Image (cartoon, rainbow, N blue to C red):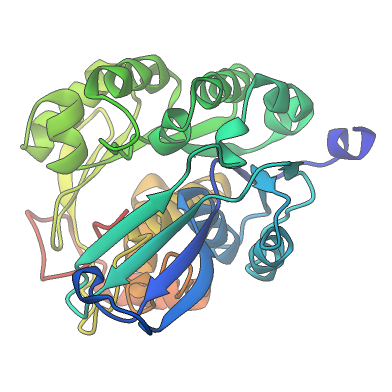
Length: 337
């Protein structure tokens, strides 16, 4: 543990990493011989890859299975610039999901998570990462991680409290998934996490309708702030991103992507990029602009980590589209998970 105590990261990402099986056809049309491609994703890996690409020293805090895909999974994360030296292993299979996305960015998912390694995340792991968490610039975590199991929920809360108590920044994405958790449980977790956050990123209407009872982005942001969140970013469909920093709530321009392929992980890309740039010293407005640009670029790839843009690309796109906040902009596929 001494080596961990001597290490300081700009961004830590706590959560689940998944094996991604990308089908070559719509799932309803899948038949014997349907081609597929294996990759690696999950909201934690997607956000960590984006943070690393944005220039932050980034580490993944996760529990990975010791099956045959564990080493390739770690190699993929490391290849994306993410430090995986603090990842724990468990005698369980890695979680996986089957994904199909068409050229319009519509997606279908089938998940396998029962008794997965990721679901064994618990407070004992947080205790083992205590020094890392109290020394980091920021922590990114999500409602998905908190919904994997009761122990994962406790881990999210413990990590959030450690980072907040040490003066670090916390970014939280509720990422509500009805297959994982009920609304009441997700709302309770949000209420406990929100006062600890520096940035709460949510989607509207999906998360907002389920968790704060509204399909209006401004109302959603106001209700999240009423729970204690300092700043709220609401992705609200094509080209619409509302930022409420407590002084005003305004829409920010979102660069469009003329050739969307797959929106999987776009929201995670936004979260990771924005958090990284905040920790590296950018203003909130600039960090959000970079996050939106990176998310827009990311939808040109297939899968959660199929397209992780270099920061030079992100900065160039943000600069070419930055303008005064307005009530919306052109079409863009950036409201993905």
